[in-house]
Length: 239
Image (cartoon, rainbow, N blue to C red; front, side, top):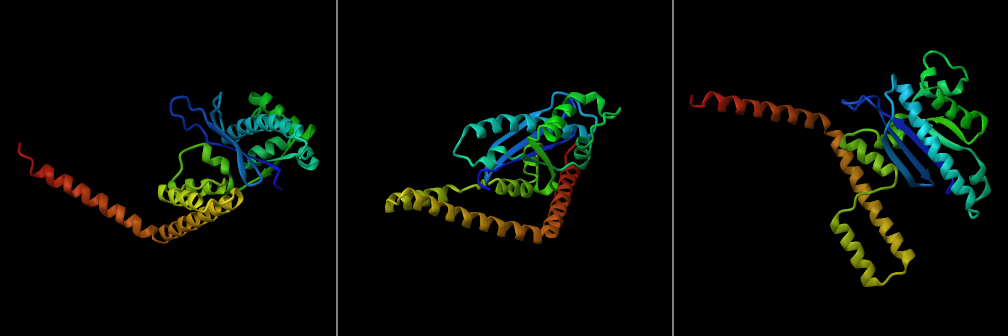
């Protein structure tokens, strides 16, 4: 659905070595477009991953309520998209189980306010519905911590962003200016070039994945050679 709002939330756990606070990541997708993202440090230390995820869920619901008011005021959007619950994708099963129960026990009472806020909007008001998503498909993971290059570019591709080279941008602009194309044709041309660049990038990633063991052996060999060179320099150092 082009106008359907999909929310994603994620959190790390205590990666800040100074404060041991977690980082919350929130992403909002409407159709295939990213309309909002945030990466914020949590205001309290979470004692577990479920608690950190619950605080991230609270941040996602807070934005969802604000954005739903904007959607409700735009009458061009279909009524079903304005009134239906917003799906919030979460990759932590423990947090989903906590929010599916109304009981407050010794493990949850110290963050009772955040829990009650999320529970009301999920079960009583019906503004949000939780849905489990695999960690590999959770785009909010992009905003919680540093990732390796392959994972980073995969999530970038999932939210619809593609890195263009300077040559690609220059060539596309020259073709548009030379042909004096209408705006809709120019947009389709740019999307086609973007698709070619994305396909080439995926082919390079597949090649890198196939040769991962060779790359690992090369790195070990390079590190060993470097250590041998340092030892030789120390042995021949004049005292």
